[in-house]
Image (cartoon, rainbow, N blue to C red; front, side, top):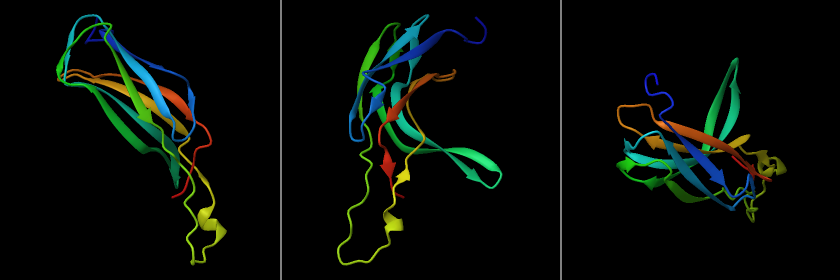
Length: 145
């Protein structure tokens, strides 16, 4: 074992891989540890990633980020599992404003983030955190800016 490599990992399991907008994601995170590990917290983050271009630069921007803390500072043990639920965004077009003339272009659907993830982190002080992420699909995800 060199510099803490292979001392632990996290495993994310979800009830399914594709969700409708506004649906709840049910899942759990399981700790795979070689030895007990003292950490500040265990949490999951649900977010979308959109690849954007600015001239010659390409970058990834996070959108719709929701964080759930699963447990607080303590010594974590191998095999511990934590359940979580996260609501997917209910992305839809805004209602038409009455009495206002607006072009159809303002209400044209725009695609949401191109990729959605559940990311789990065991936040370990003075060491490299344990991280893992799993991609999920949000079906019919449309939004407006």
